[in-house]
Amino acid sequence: MEAPRQVQQQLPARGRGGRGRGRGGVRMRGGIGGRGRGARRHHDVPDEIRATLIDHVINHRLTMAEAGRRVQPNVPRSTVSSIIQTFRRENSISTIDRVLKKHQMTMKQIYRVPFERNSDRVKELRYQYVHRIMALEGNETPHILVFVDEAGFNLAKGRRRGRNIIGHRATVDVPGQRGANITMCAAISERGVATHIPSLGPYNTQKLLNFLDHLYTDLIPENERGEERPQLPHYVIVWDNVNFHRGPRIRTWFTTHPRMLMEFLPPYSPFLNPIEEFFSAWRWRVYEHQAQDQRALLHAMDAACEDITGDQCRGWLRHSRRFFPRCIARENIRCDVDENLWPNREQRVDGQEDEDGGQEREGDNGDH
Image (cartoon, rainbow, N blue to C red; front, side):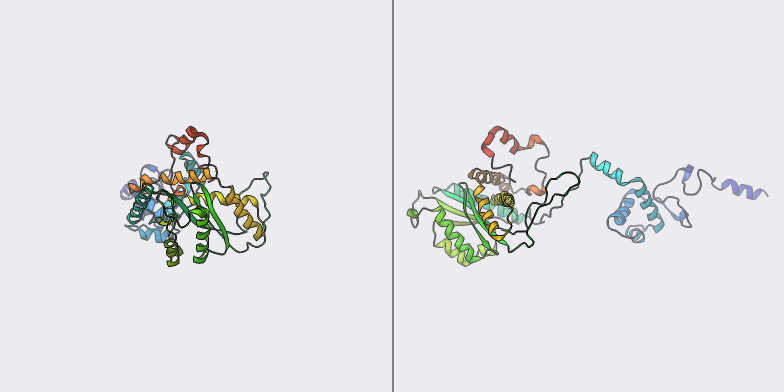
């Protein structure tokens, strides 16, 4: 009768340190112990594998069995289930929200950044572009940069946010149909908006040639056309790499207009193109007109161009030139939308210059 008593002494005590608890009666997290027939087969799971299992199940929506087979060594489904239950119990939504707020993390809109934006090829093209621009500006003959681009618009576009009393929707009357797309082609320089011509549908080679003819007459006085003297300025049309910008008819037009030159922007470099900021400010002015039909929209698009001042254009040109040193250094450059440009107020160069310069940079801020 003594043998059973010895066996009983070797068995672990039940009660506070019983089923589901480890040595000393302490409950083990993430599958140590547990219930059911597989409880004795549960084993200690390292934190790294535990995090991988949680990522597979919570973020990638794998089943617990699949998640257990994805790690090495494999983890039984019962152990994965225990880990997930512990995670969900100890990491509630309110806890996660509190931790995120503590570290100043908020929900953001995701912006897609092309992975080629800062490739070696693109950085070299930026370097060459800046050197060409600096060489033109250092030439004895004055060169004026004119930035040209196109932007589409239709009746469906408008403000997407508004204000109203709590409990009431912010509503606005809009046309039932968006109508045909209207493309605005515009040119800006340090003197302001040079030419702007809206057109139904997208721009093509013929429409672009008509625009260049109007731009030529707007830039060069009639008594200077056809003349080439060192003191007369040359105009450099800077635009992106759209296919019809490179067509043979476009190149022929520049050949027959000696005082008009052509320069292409490097790819993935909108920060070097000040007309991007022009169109950003221009769209908000079009919204203010609340056009209800196509004729009113055409008038609103023209009127919005007239509202843009020369000071604003000069401010946008200065802003684009601030990236020149980084292009020469072949640095990785990201756009304002995907780069934390001003983590500290002390580093905010624009704000400091605004405080020192007063009204000088009125066109730089407030519209974009």
